[in-house]
Image (cartoon, rainbow, N blue to C red; front, side, top):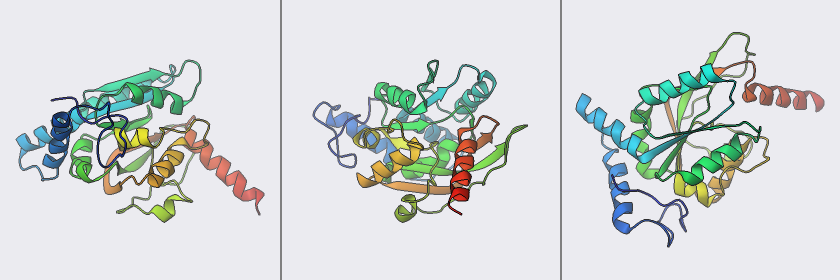
Length: 247
C-alpha cells in the first residue's frame, strides 16, 4: 500500500502540508479508511479489514527495561490483534513516556498511531472494533477493562462512554492513552506536552482546541493490567490527597 497521510498538515481534517505525499497517495489512504466503514461479512472480509487497519497504523510503545514480562505479553497481544508495524523504545534515562512517544511518532510514516503501554493487553478484536470509525475521526477510543496483578492497589474502574463529551474533557480525563490517533492531528496539536502531570489529558485538550474529531466506542477492545508500579495508581493517590487537603 502507498505511503498514506502526511505527518504535518496545515489542517488535520482537510489535507497535507506542502511537504506531504502526493494527492494519489493521500487518496489511497482515504479510500482504505472509507472501505472500513462497511461491516465485514465473513472471515475473509474480517481478515481484510484487520490487514487494512494494520497497514494504516504504527503501534508506539514506551517501556522500561525491567518490565520484560509485561512487555513481552503486550507485544504478543499486539501481534495477535493483527498489527505489524510496532515501535518500542526503552526509557533508559527515565525521560518519561511523553518524550519517547513523541520521538517515535516523528519517525512514523502511517496515517494512524496507536499508543500502547507495556501494561496494556489488546484483545484480538481491537482492529475490527475501531475500523468503522477511522474515516470520520481523529481520535478513536475504545472501551477497556481492568485487571489486577498481584499486589496492585485498587482503583476506580473504567466507565465506558458511548459518545465524546467535550465539556467533560475540561475537568475529567476519560480517554486513556491507549487510543487510535490520526498522525496529522497529533502533530497539529504539538504532540504530548512535556512536563504535564497527565500528558494524555493535555494532548486530548490540545487536540480538541484544534478541532479534532473524537469517537468513544463502548465496545471493550483492550485490558489495562493494574500493577504495583502503575502511574495511574499514583495519579489516583495524588488526587485523593488533594481532595483530602481541600476538606
